[in-house]
Image (cartoon, rainbow, N blue to C red; front, top):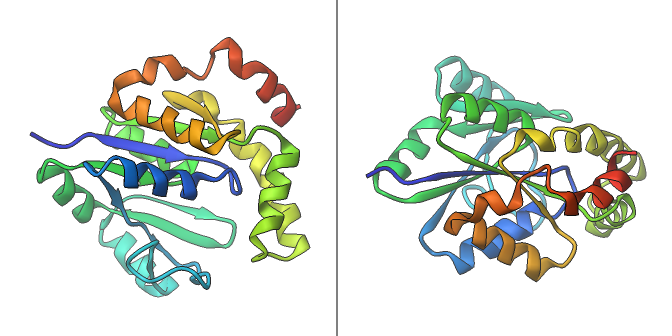
Length: 203
């Protein structure tokens, strides 16, 4: 029996990577699909752990060969999900998490309509700005660009099966756990409790 597929997306700075890491630690049955990217690794990242870091030419070769389930350009870098790796994990019965942007998530939903997609929102624009600044990896100009792009990214939340607000980290992780255990309908993107957050983020 093939494993289930969960797609988790968020704007830059919403805390998606930390949430996914905590989710995987608490749900050992889940496996992470490691994406390929042309982005340079950050100081804390290792090739093959957070991403498969490749040059642009290698990425383009793989894309032309049909090696990616989905691929997208985010800022000035390219990201893609290895179709072979994902199929092997699911064929072995593992439930797999894809941590990708909304563009990639849209492609995955078309190719794998059985997947369950989750969008992570920050609690406010101020919180998003603070998290981007706290990284201390980007210039002021890059942070401003990411904030502008985030508003556009967040406008796609309705496309997802579930929405989680990363206000309190432990609660957000617990929300993700409930979703992977079958409570996806409780986190529908149009639920009334989301509206105050959305007004702050998308106004």
